[in-house]
Image (cartoon, rainbow, N blue to C red; front, side, top):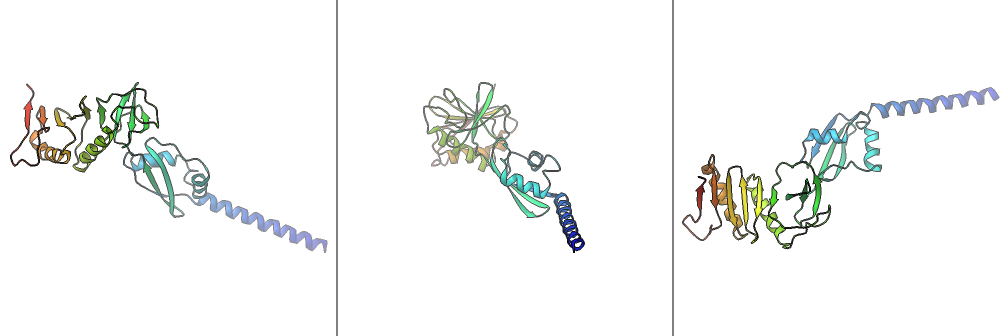
Length: 242
């Protein structure tokens, strides 16, 4: 009788060991083989994959689930957060939620990026491609996650309107400058565009888009501050540099 009990105990241990070994084999064999990244504009898919899946353990499906659910997410500049969705045991989608950035200013050797409300969302030592430098704003001490301290808070809605229009018309600029009156100018390599006030900005940027092929290769200033959508005759001028 004791022999039977001993045999049954050994069988149970053997079964439990086999199950654990099977679980371990499954655990180690479930490697993520395909990664799709969406929502990314400031980073390439390869960059996001390299940041989140640095080693073989990061590509293990079980460990990836644990890490995503129970550990703090990786801190990525200009990324608010991300979500990893399993499409199959070996295929995942990384959904990236980027921070909204409309421009940046230079401050104490760093580039301070701000959102549509003027909140500093990121500090970086590198210029982000596609985000215009904003100059001419008067401000004091700048702190991360705090509003850019300017006297005229309405300037941020004007910057947002301008950057959205530039993006809609697929116009890339190096710099946006505001003078003491709040009038805006654009710098595009050897071309400067004086836009003036925020009035009729949609028409001004649309007109700029139409003139870009004509301006290609030229150096000078395009004055669109006199643009008037009610006029049927061209109401602006281009002055070449001497």
